[in-house]
Picture: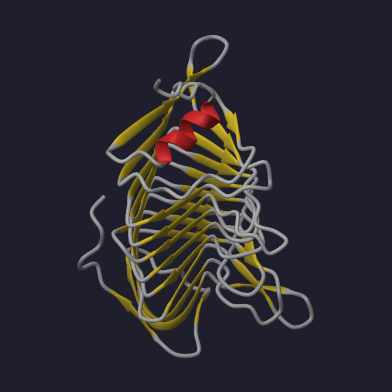
Length: 289
């Protein structure tokens, strides 16, 4: 006799991550995890929220980690997540409860909201990297996205009021970011918005960096740090990004430069600082709108 098909949202999600073939799971109600998810072995998995308000309007489906459990652990798989609200994923007491941790795979995020998570939300190493579209990361703690030895593309993404760590940390990674907003994020030691190091490259088109702050004395790059890497800013806006200096006062510093940085459009008259590196004006190869 065949086993009964899973019926609860959590049970359906658990079954989907271990399917042997391409799988599309459409959630129609919120779910709260009661245990760790199994590792993702489905080679190509799409999880889409299709929830409704009491008046029948479309809304995101919520996945809550209960501040105890991790989400998707994926190795060499394609994972697409869309129309979800992700909350309550909290790495603490030595346990890694990141929502997505991917090695040698491809991760796509569309129309999702990530809020009130802590200790990191998405971690990607190698593979075909991370693509984020039309999504928001708001009021998370301890950093949001880490990508290493890979690529990242972000289009129309909001990073707002995240605290305790750099919103987007990159190591030997190429980033293209279009029409993104980094606003009122705070970090302790460097770059409340984006930090790139170890021969990476970041390219921004029509992005805004507003009110980002590094809170510890000696920290650099209120919004962005470019360390031993390349950075390009095409028609971007910088306002009120600050670092803290001796005596507890603040100073405008939008970008800390230790590499090659190029601007297309208006270059801020202040806040472009560095111990070593070049600042140039060049519109060649700006990301397409």
